[in-house]
Image (tube, helix red, strand yellow):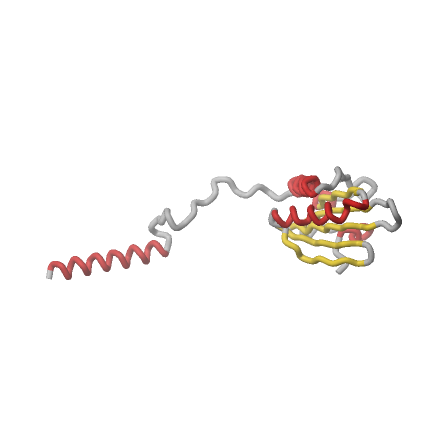
Length: 170
């Protein structure tokens, strides 16, 4: 009799431990990862700009222009991270694709991908930003090619004059 009572008490205790562990009342240090002591850093325009410039360099693109000089002034510039550069004809397509690949390896997800005329379009997304990657092929022998990588934060109000340059036409 004593054995069956002990077995019953052990069974009830095991059931309670299972129920309370599932409710988070008992800590299960082996099954649940500890929260990170450091929150994810903000994904602000400067962080995005630095990331894009790093991908471009790693992809084989030359240093690019990250300014918005000559464009309309306004608050929209705080939610855009532009990069633009000229590349030799022979290296342009490969460096562009290597840069897009590097972006994808760092959690940017492809949203769309297509080509029209002499422009290759890749649009990627990550943490509230869209990255509009463009490879513009120029006609004629010896002509260079332009690559632009422009990240725009979701909800950013772009001036009508430049919206078409940054957004995906498809």
